[in-house]
Amino acid sequence: MHWKDIAQTTIIGSENDTMSFPEAVKRLIEAGLDGYSVDLRGATRSFYRPDGEVAVLPTAPVGVPVAERFDTEAIRQSIRKAQMQTPGYTYKGFCNEAAKAGCAGYIVSFIGRRVLYFGRNGDTHTEFFPAAT
Image (cartoon, rainbow, N blue to C red; front, side, top):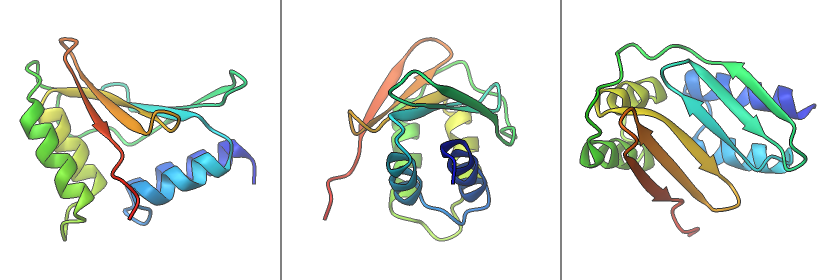
């Protein structure tokens, strides 16, 4: 399967809640990607390869506007719910909570094993991938 098809599959899987974040990361790394970014305002996900090739793919729009104030603690709480696989907590729910907390998007770095969340005002929060168990 071509890397762009794999990227599209991860979007569909996250939006349909049939693919976890760790599974998506695994598939994208195996496809040779360095990382990706999510634009919650523009409803796109950009996938990056080490050779400079990029694919920008559409995503489902977030159902709420991105708040002006960046609330780091609210974003951390949303991340924890996702990590704990809280029953009934969906990717769409995560995106809505993140937007309400002022998160305009995030950058996932496979090389750095972290996610950088950023707000409309330029504030950021870095979340490192959980250690493998």
